[in-house]
Amino acid sequence: MFLNKKKEERVLPQHIAIIMDGNGRWAKKRSLPRKAGHAAGSKTFKDIARYCNKIGIKYLTVYAFSTENWKRPKEEVDNIMNILRDYLKDTENFKGENIRLQFIGERGPLAEDIKELMLKAEDDSKNATGLHLNIALNYGGRDEIVHAVRDIVSRGVKAEDITEDTISENLYTSGQPDPDFIIRPSGEYRLSNYLIWQAAYAEYWFSDVLWPDFRPKHLEQALDEFSKRNRRFGGV
Ligand code: IPE
Ligand code: IPE
Ligand code: MG
Image (cartoon, rainbow, N blue to C red; front, side, top):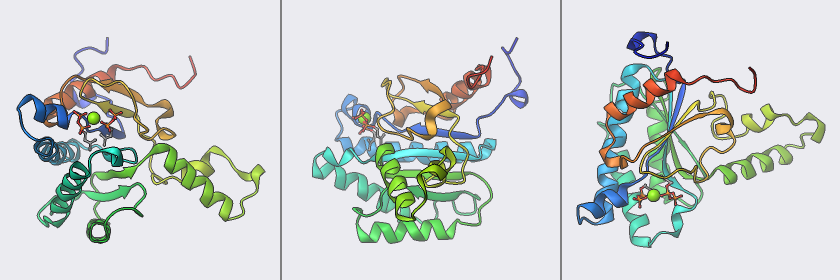
């Protein structure tokens, strides 16, 4: 009975999280260097973020670089960081589009100029009331929990006062609803250390499409599917 719902009747997720995967394979299929895949993926990222804003999604979190991605050859890491640098320097990005940008992840190991550009992008967009866009950069779910625990302990919070909310409030996503829909393209079926605390009750959608080929029509397929899911949260 939930089939063929009109778009207006659809239940949209509050918070979509996407693992932007498959850039390397996309490039390989075209005999291009991996960096061409990352460049194409960066364009897809902008298109999908805009589309989410257009259809009224409140939160979108994209996985751009994991704490594990430092294992890649230095040249590839440098390429990814350069794409990020170019994106942050492009002042036309999302200008006037009411998108609020926030970075989540451990900033320490990032280059100084990138850290400054990140702060500027966050500050410039802090009053936007449309899509809240989190970019996960040097992000790892376990790393995030370790940092949260350290912060809690260093404030001298008593053991018996620690609740699930205490942990949630000390994560990078503090104050945001947990992602209710996690999308992973590229044919991989794993979280790869993404939002492991926040994902406890998320719905998942997987697709073989490689991220640079991911279009709003794929997101629409995913959203139609989300709308049909029966979320029980342990109840009946
Ligand atoms: C995702 O694409 C981008 C990052 C992890 C930075 P990949 O580079 O992982 O692409 P595949 O998985 O090798 O195809
Ligand atoms: C996850 O993709 C990280 C990002 C998309 C940034 P990976 O390609 O790094 O994940 P694994 O290695 O296949 O698990
Ligand atoms: Mg990958």
